[in-house]
Image (cartoon, rainbow, N blue to C red; front, top):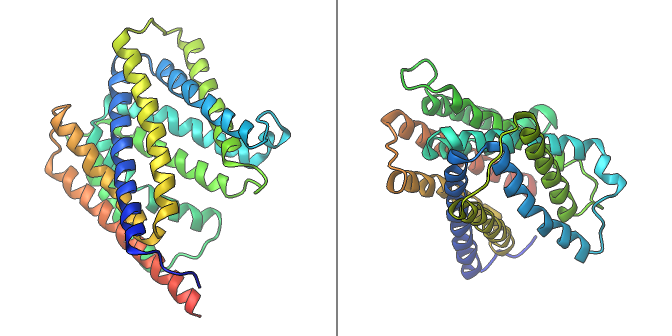
Length: 298
């Protein structure tokens, strides 16, 4: 049995997780601003292209090459497909869907991950967590409001993005341990970069960027990279069971940015749906934690 982390380390982990979620919310703001004026393919190409060298250099410093046969493994290919689907639909959603709505639906990701692990990987999920998944799905329906006057079909793009992330993360579990995180990340960004090039080639839609647009995209990459570092540090500093629930703070940051900067006004159903999604996710997390404790005790 491992020692519990000191309270100071848990507090540090919580603060790092909060910082990571705030950084990701700002990254989403920059991507939304960029996608509103620039072609989506161009935004995807530049943001992925700027991030790719970071992981190529990381792999090189670890003594690993990027262009190796492991890149053609089925699990890697499946992960890259998920990465491409998630990137394309997420940027497209940010361009046309309110930031608060995108963030609210994105909070259902842990629930859909649990469902995917049960259906695809055969992991054990009890009836309580299945109930939480169903309740969380009802919360998603309240947010996107299908059939209502305010429904926008574009909101479904966020669900497509969630499906892509689930495929990406589940496929990641099947990648051999000898493959490093830097290699996997580089392959994913290579795929997304190729997606951006393909979208530009098909549409022929590309234009010169202003200094402001260049600054916005550079900011998205900067805040996204900083968020990635902060979330990694958070999970390595504090106990996962203590730190992980603070992922949901991203919803607060995103909705706050949407209201203050973008002038968004979430309606009552969106707020209720967001609360249901977060509550279901926290309950499912608590049930998983209790199940693991019971298993360890047995």
